[in-house]
Length: 111
Length: 114
Image (cartoon, rainbow over all chains, first blue to last red; front, top):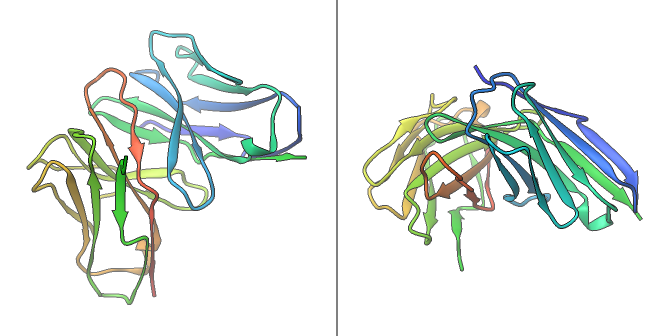
């Protein structure tokens, strides 16, 4: 059974700092990996999707990498801003078009 | 641009009561999903549908039923609510397929069972 773990569970950083969120998964037989953002009381917004054949994806200040063989992904946020404060979740897509989610990392960027 | 709409947003039930959560999407997506989110556990898949008239069990299907009579709607039913079903429920939809499959999520429905 696929298990997705996110470390750290919570992170507090000063504004402007670069930071890395980690995601690991136990079964490397995935189609893709997605990073989502969730604001309090809201749904999830997809940030980046990395296909299993890709190594990384970038969008603005966000960069996500994927090492499928080791079962790891990282989300790098450059020059963090208070508006980046949210919960970040990673999810892997398995056969049957199902996503398995991690528990998330709660990020707080202090101004 | 409504996207994925969930109703109701909040509901309080007593143990044993029944209710239905409605999910509607206007993007002509084939695939629809119901997840529950509990503190410290991420999202877990309850049931999903790969097209009108089809449903399938996810990771935690017990105590729930679903129906997909119309392509745009996916209903989640609780026949006899239990306190363990207190959670935030999210509906999502996607075009489907084994390739890129970005999900669009609704805003969530917070259910409390007393």
